Image (tube, rainbow, N blue to C red; front, side, top):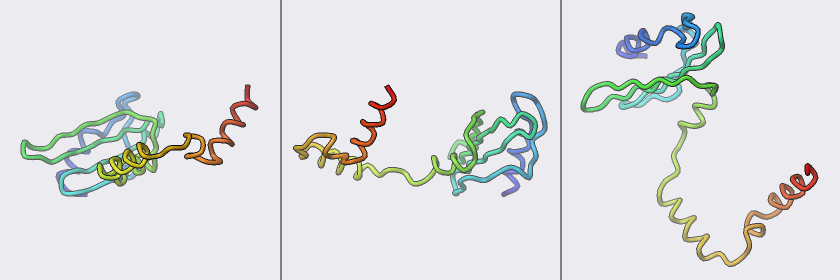
Length: 121
């Protein structure tokens, strides 16, 4: 963690819900690049999590914090690789040309899900 990040995290040292002090050892760096860092921390008192996104741009540093119930490993999954626009366009083209039913397209998983819904009613 850089000196700049240490200074930023100093301003987010307390839980916004119960005002307990965060444990700096529990801070997880979820994603880090030249322009953006995503931090996650969980309050040791009330177990509320906080996600902090720090973005470095031409106009300076922007920090956005959010109280959440999402665990660090879930945030990491959400900030993972993005779907590329070409992949979406390819899927759209394939679906427009597809002549079968949605059930056939999704296969047996759809049939199993349909049976589970029918059994639960």
